[in-house]
Length: 238
Image (cartoon, rainbow, N blue to C red; front, side, top):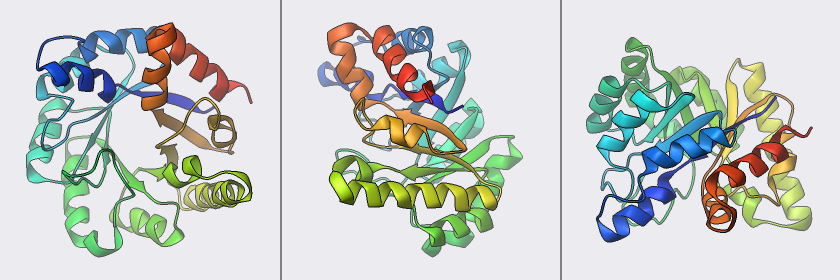
């Protein structure tokens, strides 16, 4: 059964807009868990535009599910991850000028650096995922480097419609099966919402979907616990 990781970065965005103490994303993580979240996902960015260090440490100590720490493959983040010891780390590309993550990691051109980086995280008993585009070449490199998981970037699928979206869905399905055959666990995320999530959730052996923006947007109308519950129902009805 596909599980649900809830990204709470956008709760922190509201707090940081006023540089105050509320809303506290740590408190909202509890509501997400009450709604059925199987994992809490946060992206600790270099510029700390939303999630702060204190959030990550408190979440690790207080949530009842799993903690997925998204981060760039930098020395600063490596040190933080080794102190926090999240359930797993998802390595993502990061540019200061982007509003949100724009694409997958380029594994091909960073193999040796990432091999050492992944090995260092594994030495601390942290499982590691790579956020990548659904391309077989990148999946092969993920296996070679030593990742436990991959997270397929669904941003293009989420932006398309009609036959174009169907073709992208087939690419994600094929990538999932290809990665499974290599022994990789497959997650997916980016841009998924209440209208497009079911086809991704129904892919055989899709492990987990990480969703944030659409859940938090829906929560403005119905509350976070209910919005998570609604999304969880869509994911598990297959």
